[in-house]
Image 1 (tube, rainbow, N blue to C red):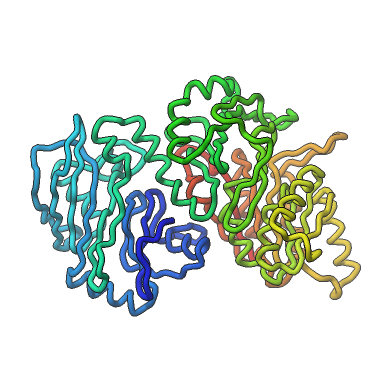
Image 2: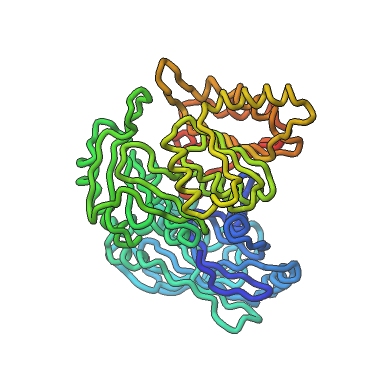
Length: 509
Protein backbone atom coordinates (compact mmCIF):
# COMPACT_ATOMS: atom_id res chain seq x y z
CA UNK A 1 0.00 0.00 0.00
CA UNK A 2 1.52 3.31 -1.07
CA UNK A 3 0.34 6.51 0.58
CA UNK A 4 0.62 9.43 -1.85
CA UNK A 5 -0.34 12.19 0.59
CA UNK A 6 -1.56 12.61 4.17
CA UNK A 7 -2.41 15.55 6.41
CA UNK A 8 -4.95 16.07 9.21
CA UNK A 9 -7.90 16.04 6.78
CA UNK A 10 -6.99 13.85 3.82
CA UNK A 11 -5.38 10.52 3.02
CA UNK A 12 -4.52 9.83 -0.62
CA UNK A 13 -3.51 6.34 -1.68
CA UNK A 14 -2.50 4.49 -4.83
CA UNK A 15 -5.36 2.01 -5.20
CA UNK A 16 -4.69 -1.25 -7.05
CA UNK A 17 -7.14 -2.90 -9.40
CA UNK A 18 -9.18 -5.71 -7.86
CA UNK A 19 -10.40 -4.15 -4.61
CA UNK A 20 -13.55 -2.07 -4.10
CA UNK A 21 -13.40 1.32 -2.44
CA UNK A 22 -15.83 0.19 0.26
CA UNK A 23 -17.30 -3.20 1.16
CA UNK A 24 -20.71 -4.07 -0.20
CA UNK A 25 -21.68 -6.57 2.53
CA UNK A 26 -20.60 -7.65 6.01
CA UNK A 27 -17.61 -9.94 5.63
CA UNK A 28 -16.30 -8.16 2.51
CA UNK A 29 -13.08 -6.18 2.61
CA UNK A 30 -12.98 -2.99 0.58
CA UNK A 31 -10.08 -0.57 0.71
CA UNK A 32 -11.72 1.35 3.59
CA UNK A 33 -11.88 -1.85 5.66
CA UNK A 34 -8.41 -2.94 4.52
CA UNK A 35 -6.89 0.29 5.82
CA UNK A 36 -8.64 -0.20 9.15
CA UNK A 37 -7.77 -3.90 9.49
CA UNK A 38 -4.17 -3.84 8.33
CA UNK A 39 -3.02 -0.22 8.89
CA UNK A 40 -5.21 0.89 11.84
CA UNK A 41 -6.46 3.85 9.80
CA UNK A 42 -10.07 4.99 10.13
CA UNK A 43 -11.02 6.71 6.87
CA UNK A 44 -14.26 8.00 5.39
CA UNK A 45 -15.23 7.80 1.74
CA UNK A 46 -15.40 11.11 -0.14
CA UNK A 47 -14.82 9.74 -3.66
CA UNK A 48 -14.69 6.31 -5.25
CA UNK A 49 -12.92 4.27 -7.89
CA UNK A 50 -14.50 1.18 -9.42
CA UNK A 51 -13.17 -2.18 -8.26
CA UNK A 52 -11.23 -2.71 -11.47
CA UNK A 53 -9.85 0.84 -11.67
CA UNK A 54 -6.47 1.73 -10.18
CA UNK A 55 -4.70 4.96 -9.25
CA UNK A 56 -5.19 8.05 -7.10
CA UNK A 57 -7.97 7.73 -4.53
CA UNK A 58 -8.74 10.28 -1.84
CA UNK A 59 -10.22 9.57 1.59
CA UNK A 60 -11.39 11.94 4.31
CA UNK A 61 -10.05 11.60 7.84
CA UNK A 62 -12.75 13.72 9.52
CA UNK A 63 -16.46 14.40 9.12
CA UNK A 64 -15.66 18.02 8.28
CA UNK A 65 -13.46 16.83 5.41
CA UNK A 66 -16.34 14.72 4.05
CA UNK A 67 -18.53 17.84 3.96
CA UNK A 68 -15.76 19.85 2.27
CA UNK A 69 -15.35 17.15 -0.37
CA UNK A 70 -19.08 17.23 -1.11
CA UNK A 71 -18.89 20.98 -1.70
CA UNK A 72 -15.80 20.62 -3.92
CA UNK A 73 -17.57 18.04 -6.06
CA UNK A 74 -20.80 20.06 -6.31
CA UNK A 75 -18.87 23.18 -7.36
CA UNK A 76 -16.66 21.14 -9.73
CA UNK A 77 -13.50 22.63 -8.25
CA UNK A 78 -11.43 19.45 -8.48
CA UNK A 79 -9.98 17.98 -11.64
CA UNK A 80 -9.30 14.28 -12.20
CA UNK A 81 -7.20 12.90 -15.01
CA UNK A 82 -7.39 9.24 -16.09
CA UNK A 83 -5.47 7.12 -18.59
CA UNK A 84 -6.96 4.12 -20.35
CA UNK A 85 -6.36 1.63 -23.16
CA UNK A 86 -8.78 1.04 -26.02
CA UNK A 87 -8.69 0.20 -29.70
CA UNK A 88 -7.46 2.93 -32.02
CA UNK A 89 -9.91 5.36 -33.56
CA UNK A 90 -9.58 8.30 -35.93
CA UNK A 91 -10.18 11.05 -33.35
CA UNK A 92 -7.33 12.76 -31.52
CA UNK A 93 -9.32 15.00 -29.15
CA UNK A 94 -13.03 15.38 -28.40
CA UNK A 95 -15.59 16.07 -25.68
CA UNK A 96 -18.50 13.81 -24.72
CA UNK A 97 -21.42 15.50 -22.93
CA UNK A 98 -24.02 12.72 -23.06
CA UNK A 99 -26.11 12.82 -19.85
CA UNK A 100 -25.80 9.79 -17.58
CA UNK A 101 -28.68 8.60 -15.40
CA UNK A 102 -30.51 11.81 -16.27
CA UNK A 103 -27.68 14.00 -14.97
CA UNK A 104 -25.38 16.32 -16.95
CA UNK A 105 -21.68 15.44 -17.21
CA UNK A 106 -18.69 16.17 -19.40
CA UNK A 107 -15.59 14.14 -20.32
CA UNK A 108 -12.67 15.53 -22.33
CA UNK A 109 -10.85 12.80 -24.29
CA UNK A 110 -7.43 12.94 -25.90
CA UNK A 111 -5.37 10.29 -27.67
CA UNK A 112 -1.87 10.16 -26.15
CA UNK A 113 -0.08 7.34 -27.97
CA UNK A 114 -0.87 4.84 -30.71
CA UNK A 115 0.33 1.28 -31.17
CA UNK A 116 -0.29 -1.38 -33.83
CA UNK A 117 -3.79 -2.22 -32.53
CA UNK A 118 -4.47 -0.25 -29.35
CA UNK A 119 -3.98 3.32 -28.19
CA UNK A 120 -3.45 5.10 -24.88
CA UNK A 121 -6.05 7.74 -24.14
CA UNK A 122 -6.52 10.43 -21.51
CA UNK A 123 -9.83 11.44 -19.97
CA UNK A 124 -10.36 14.51 -17.80
CA UNK A 125 -13.43 15.12 -15.61
CA UNK A 126 -14.45 17.62 -12.94
CA UNK A 127 -17.24 15.68 -11.27
CA UNK A 128 -17.69 11.99 -11.92
CA UNK A 129 -20.94 10.16 -12.49
CA UNK A 130 -21.25 6.37 -12.12
CA UNK A 131 -18.87 4.70 -14.62
CA UNK A 132 -18.67 8.03 -16.45
CA UNK A 133 -15.42 7.48 -18.35
CA UNK A 134 -16.26 3.87 -19.23
CA UNK A 135 -19.74 4.79 -20.49
CA UNK A 136 -18.62 7.90 -22.37
CA UNK A 137 -15.73 5.97 -23.95
CA UNK A 138 -18.11 3.22 -25.10
CA UNK A 139 -20.50 5.88 -26.46
CA UNK A 140 -17.55 7.34 -28.37
CA UNK A 141 -16.83 3.98 -30.01
CA UNK A 142 -13.76 3.09 -27.94
CA UNK A 143 -14.83 0.79 -25.08
CA UNK A 144 -12.05 0.19 -22.57
CA UNK A 145 -9.92 -2.92 -22.77
CA UNK A 146 -11.05 -5.33 -20.02
CA UNK A 147 -14.41 -3.60 -19.49
CA UNK A 148 -16.87 -6.49 -19.38
CA UNK A 149 -19.84 -4.20 -18.71
CA UNK A 150 -19.56 -1.79 -21.65
CA UNK A 151 -17.07 -3.29 -24.08
CA UNK A 152 -16.42 -7.01 -23.53
CA UNK A 153 -12.81 -6.74 -24.70
CA UNK A 154 -11.25 -9.42 -22.49
CA UNK A 155 -8.23 -8.68 -20.30
CA UNK A 156 -7.27 -9.50 -16.67
CA UNK A 157 -8.46 -6.06 -15.52
CA UNK A 158 -10.20 -2.88 -16.65
CA UNK A 159 -7.43 -0.81 -18.22
CA UNK A 160 -8.35 2.44 -16.48
CA UNK A 161 -6.00 4.32 -14.13
CA UNK A 162 -6.49 7.61 -12.28
CA UNK A 163 -3.16 9.39 -12.84
CA UNK A 164 -3.69 12.78 -11.16
CA UNK A 165 -6.08 14.76 -8.99
CA UNK A 166 -5.90 18.52 -8.52
CA UNK A 167 -7.65 19.35 -5.25
CA UNK A 168 -8.32 22.80 -3.72
CA UNK A 169 -6.38 23.37 -0.51
CA UNK A 170 -3.64 20.85 -1.37
CA UNK A 171 -0.68 22.65 -2.91
CA UNK A 172 0.54 19.76 -5.01
CA UNK A 173 -0.79 17.60 -7.78
CA UNK A 174 -1.69 14.20 -6.38
CA UNK A 175 -0.17 11.76 -8.85
CA UNK A 176 0.17 8.02 -9.38
CA UNK A 177 2.53 6.73 -12.08
CA UNK A 178 0.94 4.89 -14.97
CA UNK A 179 1.32 1.10 -14.56
CA UNK A 180 4.44 0.14 -16.51
CA UNK A 181 2.64 -2.50 -18.55
CA UNK A 182 0.28 0.07 -20.12
CA UNK A 183 3.01 1.26 -22.47
CA UNK A 184 4.35 -2.22 -23.20
CA UNK A 185 0.81 -3.33 -24.11
CA UNK A 186 0.35 -0.39 -26.49
CA UNK A 187 3.60 -1.41 -28.21
CA UNK A 188 2.30 -4.95 -28.73
CA UNK A 189 3.85 -6.94 -25.87
CA UNK A 190 0.49 -8.50 -25.02
CA UNK A 191 1.56 -11.64 -23.14
CA UNK A 192 4.08 -9.92 -20.87
CA UNK A 193 1.56 -7.16 -20.17
CA UNK A 194 -1.00 -9.77 -19.08
CA UNK A 195 1.51 -11.19 -16.57
CA UNK A 196 2.32 -7.71 -15.26
CA UNK A 197 -1.36 -6.79 -14.95
CA UNK A 198 -1.85 -9.96 -12.93
CA UNK A 199 0.95 -9.08 -10.50
CA UNK A 200 -0.12 -5.46 -10.11
CA UNK A 201 -3.43 -6.52 -8.55
CA UNK A 202 -1.61 -7.96 -5.52
CA UNK A 203 2.07 -7.00 -5.61
CA UNK A 204 3.39 -4.58 -4.48
CA UNK A 205 0.05 -3.60 -2.83
CA UNK A 206 0.24 -6.42 -0.26
CA UNK A 207 3.98 -5.97 0.29
CA UNK A 208 3.17 -3.19 2.78
CA UNK A 209 2.05 -5.89 5.24
CA UNK A 210 3.78 -9.09 4.10
CA UNK A 211 6.43 -10.51 1.79
CA UNK A 212 4.00 -13.33 0.90
CA UNK A 213 0.98 -13.27 -1.41
CA UNK A 214 -0.81 -15.28 -4.08
CA UNK A 215 0.04 -14.03 -7.57
CA UNK A 216 -2.09 -16.46 -9.56
CA UNK A 217 -5.17 -18.07 -8.02
CA UNK A 218 -6.38 -21.48 -9.10
CA UNK A 219 -8.87 -21.16 -11.95
CA UNK A 220 -7.87 -17.63 -12.98
CA UNK A 221 -7.44 -17.37 -16.75
CA UNK A 222 -8.46 -21.06 -17.03
CA UNK A 223 -5.22 -22.24 -15.45
CA UNK A 224 -5.44 -25.24 -13.10
CA UNK A 225 -2.53 -24.00 -11.02
CA UNK A 226 -1.63 -21.46 -8.35
CA UNK A 227 1.47 -19.32 -7.90
CA UNK A 228 2.38 -18.07 -4.41
CA UNK A 229 5.20 -15.74 -3.40
CA UNK A 230 6.98 -16.61 -0.16
CA UNK A 231 9.72 -14.07 0.46
CA UNK A 232 12.23 -14.29 -2.39
CA UNK A 233 10.92 -17.52 -3.87
CA UNK A 234 7.82 -18.65 -5.72
CA UNK A 235 5.84 -21.81 -5.07
CA UNK A 236 3.81 -23.15 -8.01
CA UNK A 237 1.14 -25.76 -7.37
CA UNK A 238 -0.37 -27.72 -10.25
CA UNK A 239 -3.69 -29.48 -9.62
CA UNK A 240 -3.73 -31.84 -12.61
CA UNK A 241 -2.14 -35.08 -11.40
CA UNK A 242 -1.43 -36.15 -14.98
CA UNK A 243 1.01 -33.26 -15.50
CA UNK A 244 4.43 -33.53 -13.92
CA UNK A 245 6.08 -30.65 -12.10
CA UNK A 246 8.77 -30.51 -14.78
CA UNK A 247 6.13 -30.24 -17.51
CA UNK A 248 4.45 -27.34 -15.68
CA UNK A 249 7.78 -25.59 -15.25
CA UNK A 250 8.68 -25.90 -18.93
CA UNK A 251 5.21 -24.82 -20.05
CA UNK A 252 5.02 -21.71 -17.87
CA UNK A 253 8.70 -20.75 -17.64
CA UNK A 254 8.22 -17.41 -19.43
CA UNK A 255 5.47 -16.36 -17.01
CA UNK A 256 7.44 -17.53 -13.96
CA UNK A 257 10.57 -15.68 -15.07
CA UNK A 258 8.48 -12.52 -15.53
CA UNK A 259 6.95 -12.90 -12.08
CA UNK A 260 10.41 -13.40 -10.54
CA UNK A 261 11.80 -10.35 -12.29
CA UNK A 262 9.01 -8.00 -11.25
CA UNK A 263 8.63 -9.35 -7.69
CA UNK A 264 12.36 -9.55 -6.99
CA UNK A 265 12.35 -13.34 -6.58
CA UNK A 266 15.34 -15.64 -7.05
CA UNK A 267 13.53 -18.74 -8.34
CA UNK A 268 11.19 -21.27 -6.88
CA UNK A 269 9.64 -24.71 -6.83
CA UNK A 270 6.87 -26.39 -8.82
CA UNK A 271 4.74 -29.12 -7.24
CA UNK A 272 1.98 -31.40 -8.45
CA UNK A 273 -0.85 -31.71 -5.93
CA UNK A 274 -2.27 -35.14 -5.04
CA UNK A 275 -6.03 -35.10 -4.42
CA UNK A 276 -6.37 -38.47 -2.73
CA UNK A 277 -6.33 -37.99 1.06
CA UNK A 278 -5.23 -41.59 1.50
CA UNK A 279 -1.80 -40.89 0.05
CA UNK A 280 0.74 -39.90 2.63
CA UNK A 281 2.29 -37.08 0.64
CA UNK A 282 0.41 -34.00 -0.49
CA UNK A 283 2.59 -33.43 -3.56
CA UNK A 284 3.64 -36.03 -6.14
CA UNK A 285 6.89 -34.51 -7.40
CA UNK A 286 8.88 -31.31 -7.27
CA UNK A 287 10.86 -29.33 -9.86
CA UNK A 288 12.94 -26.22 -9.18
CA UNK A 289 14.41 -23.29 -11.09
CA UNK A 290 16.69 -20.35 -10.27
CA UNK A 291 18.77 -20.19 -7.12
CA UNK A 292 18.32 -23.11 -4.70
CA UNK A 293 15.52 -22.65 -2.18
CA UNK A 294 16.68 -22.99 1.44
CA UNK A 295 15.28 -25.97 3.34
CA UNK A 296 13.66 -23.52 5.76
CA UNK A 297 13.59 -19.73 5.90
CA UNK A 298 11.56 -16.96 7.62
CA UNK A 299 8.91 -14.78 5.97
CA UNK A 300 7.05 -11.91 7.57
CA UNK A 301 3.45 -10.76 8.00
CA UNK A 302 3.01 -7.42 9.76
CA UNK A 303 5.60 -7.50 12.57
CA UNK A 304 5.60 -11.29 12.91
CA UNK A 305 7.83 -13.90 11.30
CA UNK A 306 7.10 -17.50 10.34
CA UNK A 307 9.33 -20.25 9.01
CA UNK A 308 8.30 -21.86 5.72
CA UNK A 309 9.53 -24.92 3.83
CA UNK A 310 8.93 -24.92 0.08
CA UNK A 311 10.94 -28.05 -0.69
CA UNK A 312 8.90 -30.49 1.40
CA UNK A 313 6.08 -32.62 0.03
CA UNK A 314 3.64 -31.49 2.72
CA UNK A 315 2.22 -28.07 3.56
CA UNK A 316 4.57 -25.09 3.45
CA UNK A 317 3.80 -23.90 6.97
CA UNK A 318 1.78 -20.70 6.46
CA UNK A 319 -1.68 -20.50 4.87
CA UNK A 320 -1.91 -17.20 2.97
CA UNK A 321 -5.70 -17.39 2.69
CA UNK A 322 -5.95 -16.67 6.44
CA UNK A 323 -3.97 -13.42 6.36
CA UNK A 324 -7.04 -11.29 7.10
CA UNK A 325 -8.38 -13.80 9.65
CA UNK A 326 -5.12 -13.72 11.59
CA UNK A 327 -5.30 -9.95 11.75
CA UNK A 328 -8.92 -10.08 12.97
CA UNK A 329 -7.89 -12.49 15.71
CA UNK A 330 -5.15 -10.07 16.77
CA UNK A 331 -7.68 -7.23 17.00
CA UNK A 332 -9.90 -9.33 19.30
CA UNK A 333 -7.32 -11.18 21.42
CA UNK A 334 -6.02 -8.64 23.96
CA UNK A 335 -6.57 -9.90 27.50
CA UNK A 336 -8.53 -12.93 26.25
CA UNK A 337 -8.32 -16.67 26.84
CA UNK A 338 -7.70 -18.12 23.38
CA UNK A 339 -7.79 -21.65 21.96
CA UNK A 340 -6.32 -22.48 18.57
CA UNK A 341 -7.72 -25.87 17.54
CA UNK A 342 -6.06 -27.84 14.73
CA UNK A 343 -3.29 -25.34 15.38
CA UNK A 344 -0.93 -26.55 12.61
CA UNK A 345 2.18 -24.31 12.91
CA UNK A 346 0.45 -21.89 15.32
CA UNK A 347 0.30 -18.73 13.22
CA UNK A 348 -3.05 -17.76 14.79
CA UNK A 349 -1.50 -18.40 18.20
CA UNK A 350 1.43 -16.09 17.44
CA UNK A 351 -0.94 -13.28 16.45
CA UNK A 352 -3.01 -13.71 19.61
CA UNK A 353 0.07 -13.76 21.84
CA UNK A 354 1.57 -10.70 20.16
CA UNK A 355 -1.73 -8.87 20.69
CA UNK A 356 -1.58 -9.47 24.45
CA UNK A 357 -3.81 -12.50 24.98
CA UNK A 358 -3.98 -13.71 28.59
CA UNK A 359 -3.25 -17.28 27.52
CA UNK A 360 -3.23 -19.19 24.21
CA UNK A 361 -3.74 -22.95 23.97
CA UNK A 362 -2.52 -24.52 20.72
CA UNK A 363 -4.07 -27.96 20.21
CA UNK A 364 -2.93 -30.36 17.49
CA UNK A 365 -2.32 -34.09 17.22
CA UNK A 366 0.73 -33.69 14.95
CA UNK A 367 3.88 -33.36 17.04
CA UNK A 368 5.82 -32.04 14.03
CA UNK A 369 3.37 -29.20 13.47
CA UNK A 370 3.40 -28.22 17.14
CA UNK A 371 7.19 -28.32 17.02
CA UNK A 372 7.14 -25.83 14.15
CA UNK A 373 4.61 -23.81 16.14
CA UNK A 374 6.96 -23.62 19.11
CA UNK A 375 9.70 -22.42 16.76
CA UNK A 376 7.41 -19.71 15.37
CA UNK A 377 6.48 -18.54 18.86
CA UNK A 378 10.15 -18.47 19.84
CA UNK A 379 11.13 -16.75 16.58
CA UNK A 380 8.86 -13.87 17.57
CA UNK A 381 10.10 -13.86 21.18
CA UNK A 382 6.63 -14.69 22.49
CA UNK A 383 7.65 -17.69 24.60
CA UNK A 384 9.02 -15.91 27.65
CA UNK A 385 5.86 -15.20 29.65
CA UNK A 386 4.57 -18.77 29.91
CA UNK A 387 1.16 -17.93 28.42
CA UNK A 388 1.74 -20.08 25.32
CA UNK A 389 0.45 -23.62 25.95
CA UNK A 390 1.02 -26.48 23.49
CA UNK A 391 -1.21 -29.55 23.72
CA UNK A 392 -0.52 -32.64 21.62
CA UNK A 393 -3.95 -34.23 21.49
CA UNK A 394 -6.77 -35.02 19.10
CA UNK A 395 -8.96 -31.89 19.06
CA UNK A 396 -12.09 -34.02 19.48
CA UNK A 397 -10.72 -35.59 22.65
CA UNK A 398 -9.62 -32.22 24.01
CA UNK A 399 -13.08 -30.75 23.43
CA UNK A 400 -14.75 -33.76 25.07
CA UNK A 401 -12.43 -33.41 28.04
CA UNK A 402 -13.26 -29.70 28.37
CA UNK A 403 -16.97 -30.53 28.19
CA UNK A 404 -16.64 -32.97 31.10
CA UNK A 405 -14.58 -30.46 33.01
CA UNK A 406 -17.26 -27.79 32.61
CA UNK A 407 -19.92 -30.25 33.75
CA UNK A 408 -17.94 -31.18 36.84
CA UNK A 409 -16.88 -27.65 37.80
CA UNK A 410 -20.15 -25.88 36.98
CA UNK A 411 -19.96 -22.16 37.70
CA UNK A 412 -16.26 -22.50 38.61
CA UNK A 413 -15.35 -23.47 35.05
CA UNK A 414 -13.41 -20.75 33.23
CA UNK A 415 -14.68 -20.47 29.66
CA UNK A 416 -12.71 -19.34 26.62
CA UNK A 417 -13.17 -15.93 25.01
CA UNK A 418 -11.85 -16.65 21.54
CA UNK A 419 -11.68 -20.02 19.76
CA UNK A 420 -10.21 -20.72 16.32
CA UNK A 421 -11.30 -23.90 14.55
CA UNK A 422 -9.71 -24.49 11.13
CA UNK A 423 -9.84 -28.28 10.62
CA UNK A 424 -8.46 -30.22 7.66
CA UNK A 425 -10.88 -31.70 5.16
CA UNK A 426 -9.49 -35.14 5.91
CA UNK A 427 -6.76 -36.58 8.08
CA UNK A 428 -5.69 -40.01 9.22
CA UNK A 429 -3.88 -40.74 12.47
CA UNK A 430 -3.36 -44.44 11.73
CA UNK A 431 -4.94 -47.50 13.37
CA UNK A 432 -8.05 -47.02 11.26
CA UNK A 433 -8.78 -43.61 12.79
CA UNK A 434 -9.69 -40.78 10.45
CA UNK A 435 -11.22 -37.31 10.44
CA UNK A 436 -13.78 -36.10 7.86
CA UNK A 437 -14.69 -32.43 8.32
CA UNK A 438 -18.27 -32.80 7.03
CA UNK A 439 -18.97 -35.66 9.43
CA UNK A 440 -17.33 -33.97 12.42
CA UNK A 441 -18.58 -30.40 11.84
CA UNK A 442 -21.83 -30.50 13.90
CA UNK A 443 -20.09 -32.02 16.91
CA UNK A 444 -17.25 -29.48 16.71
CA UNK A 445 -19.73 -26.62 16.52
CA UNK A 446 -21.76 -27.70 19.56
CA UNK A 447 -18.76 -28.53 21.74
CA UNK A 448 -17.00 -25.26 20.94
CA UNK A 449 -20.18 -23.29 21.64
CA UNK A 450 -20.48 -25.04 25.02
CA UNK A 451 -17.06 -23.90 26.29
CA UNK A 452 -17.18 -20.41 24.79
CA UNK A 453 -17.76 -17.46 27.12
CA UNK A 454 -21.11 -15.69 27.01
CA UNK A 455 -19.78 -12.84 24.87
CA UNK A 456 -17.17 -15.01 23.16
CA UNK A 457 -16.16 -15.22 19.49
CA UNK A 458 -15.38 -18.31 17.42
CA UNK A 459 -13.66 -18.32 14.04
CA UNK A 460 -14.58 -21.37 11.97
CA UNK A 461 -13.03 -22.24 8.65
CA UNK A 462 -12.56 -25.09 6.19
CA UNK A 463 -11.66 -25.57 2.53
CA UNK A 464 -13.95 -28.49 1.77
CA UNK A 465 -14.68 -27.30 -1.76
CA UNK A 466 -16.85 -30.31 -2.61
CA UNK A 467 -19.04 -29.80 0.47
CA UNK A 468 -22.26 -27.85 0.82
CA UNK A 469 -21.76 -24.25 1.94
CA UNK A 470 -25.35 -24.17 3.17
CA UNK A 471 -24.68 -27.15 5.44
CA UNK A 472 -21.67 -25.53 7.10
CA UNK A 473 -23.36 -22.15 7.50
CA UNK A 474 -26.72 -23.50 8.68
CA UNK A 475 -25.04 -25.71 11.30
CA UNK A 476 -23.33 -22.65 12.77
CA UNK A 477 -26.38 -20.41 12.41
CA UNK A 478 -28.52 -22.84 14.41
CA UNK A 479 -26.20 -22.51 17.41
CA UNK A 480 -24.64 -19.02 17.39
CA UNK A 481 -26.53 -15.74 17.72
CA UNK A 482 -24.74 -14.16 14.76
CA UNK A 483 -22.72 -15.79 11.98
CA UNK A 484 -20.92 -13.66 9.37
CA UNK A 485 -19.48 -15.16 6.21
CA UNK A 486 -16.03 -13.63 5.72
CA UNK A 487 -14.47 -13.35 2.30
CA UNK A 488 -10.86 -14.53 1.97
CA UNK A 489 -8.08 -12.02 1.16
CA UNK A 490 -8.19 -10.20 -2.18
CA UNK A 491 -5.54 -12.49 -3.69
CA UNK A 492 -7.95 -15.42 -3.29
CA UNK A 493 -10.87 -14.17 -5.42
CA UNK A 494 -14.02 -16.12 -6.21
CA UNK A 495 -13.52 -17.57 -9.70
CA UNK A 496 -16.65 -17.92 -11.84
CA UNK A 497 -17.77 -21.52 -12.08
CA UNK A 498 -15.51 -22.63 -9.23
CA UNK A 499 -16.47 -23.39 -5.59
CA UNK A 500 -15.17 -21.03 -2.91
CA UNK A 501 -11.51 -21.62 -2.14
CA UNK A 502 -12.08 -21.39 1.61
CA UNK A 503 -15.11 -20.86 3.85
CA UNK A 504 -14.61 -18.53 6.81
CA UNK A 505 -17.21 -17.75 9.48
CA UNK A 506 -17.01 -15.21 12.30
CA UNK A 507 -19.41 -16.37 15.04
CA UNK A 508 -20.68 -14.59 18.14
CA UNK A 509 -22.23 -16.57 20.97
